[in-house]
Length: 400
Ligand code: NDP
Image 1: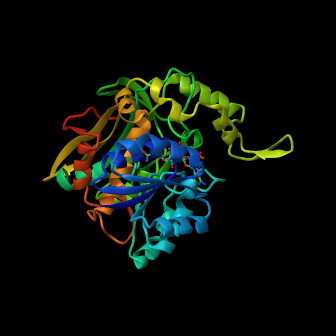
Image 2: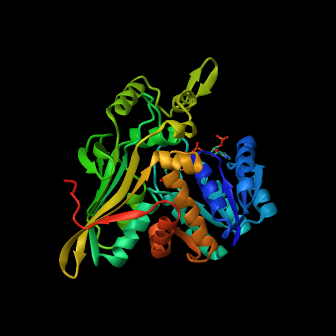
Image 3: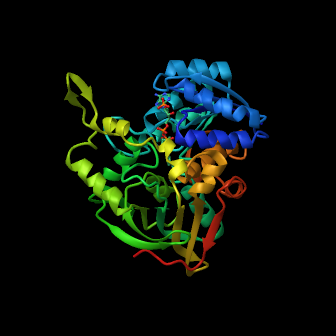
């Protein structure tokens, strides 16, 4: 039992907040603190009559460490759950250090001016968190997040060594718009327009954006085109899982999405370089975000399913072994339960579970850790209980 401060009140935060309120035995109190307080208040007004969790709200600029420290000191949460944007990771970690409060996030820090996804900035906090006696749990969404828990579970129960991991992220959902992104457009487009990369024999291999394409038949969804992307969990999994020779990440994209993205790229709309427009500096990608549909509004329109998981290949008792762990999630079921589509749902549920692992002391180690460094068993059990049941396949089709 305890209190959690949730920073941000967007698509992912909304799901996590719904789930905390369903789990009031653990989350006695939550504070929703974000840039736009009216959004926090609206969610509190909707949820407070349905839950024993006591919901408070506050306005905060999470880029400002002093403001965060003052707010944390006044609310005294057991854990801060960062569901704002990756740009705020370090300021929120600084505030957690100053107040000796545990920290959880779902995406690694990224400086505003370079789309570079690396853990080095957050890993640099390891000693400080150890000395302060608090935990930072990095990447408690789906990918990163559940993919790391799946990897730790496979390592613990199914393999002596894992040599190959392919993470497959399939969204078979259709929102009916020619072009929209399922989560924050700025973060999403930065991710997919960057060069692809994967790790082979301890080295990063770089590809052009969308250079490597495969077709895969996903259970619950059907056949989809998928493309190799760089993804942040590759970096930590390659270090934390024993025996890795190669680890790749694939995400499905429809042709309409890719055609629009190419066109927007060609005209310069996805650039993160500021330009001058009518005497004012603007970032084209931030302007594009302003004209695209708000991901929070997609839920009602999106039909279909997601299927996200990991295919592992390695050895058990001297024999080759293959194992696929995945979750299938239905957009409309998510919408009926919490008013959001499955992309926010599959991230918000693990975010709540990550905070719960720390609040209940099931994951209790001072320092900065990626999710696969903890015992996966209680998290796997919680996924089944809180809406993201997983399935396993001991004879999956492999990706060549
Ligand atoms: P949204 O843009 O919907 O929400 C972000 C929220 O953060 C908004 O409420 C925004 O406020 C608030 N915010 C932004 N800047 C500040 C600030 N300086 N101070 C206070 N609040 C701020 O994003 P999503 O919900 O889609 O994504 C949230 C996070 O989840 C991102 O980091 C994203 O990368 C991550 N993610 C992780 C996934 C995973 O599987 N691991 C998958 C999907 C997302 P306002 O309402 O005023 O705009």
